[in-house]
Image 1: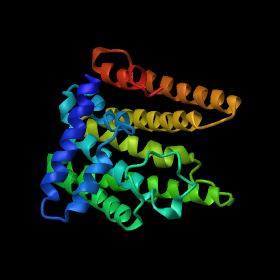
Image 2: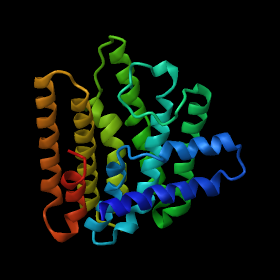
Image 3: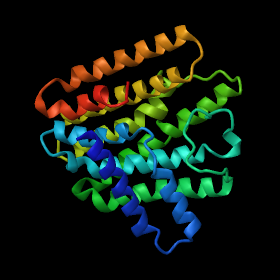
Length: 260
């Protein structure tokens, strides 16, 4: 099921890009496709499908939120390939074969705009709320603030999130929160289930960040500590999701994929 959903997600995003960018220059079109033709954190986008299933609907009900989450993540990631960020985000996957700052900026902006456009046209009665949640995930309380603070840390500046959240929650947890919350929202879930779905997303996103950080650490004790923190977060998410049949996809994302 998980592999099938991954392929459906990527294929659908390519289709959305093709329909939207068909009259644009070929280099730009190719760049848009290149950025989503990878497996970088697809599980976090598919939290939207898991969430919709968890709320009593089908996996496909949450696909619009998954599609938007993938394009938003790809848009941010390709922005970070510009030379200005060299050495700060070098652990992220390369989405372009050759560095091209101008194309990376245009492509990132294009993917983010396309994600918002897609939500506005495919979210049904929840379109406005989905767009609002996506903007929150990206903006001052989400990814962009976390990334800018990471740059400050790399420059040796002390930085603290005003509300006490960790940087990993800002630029990994908040977009995963959007996906999981969005999948629940598309099913018309209750406020309580929406809150729980959002919390599962935050926990899973933070765990994924810590796992990737551990993979690139050369310090054995640090790796062990990061892995322990990630597993603790996943256990918390699993406690919220439970073990009923409607939580199978959540649990698959957390344990049966390459998440941990």
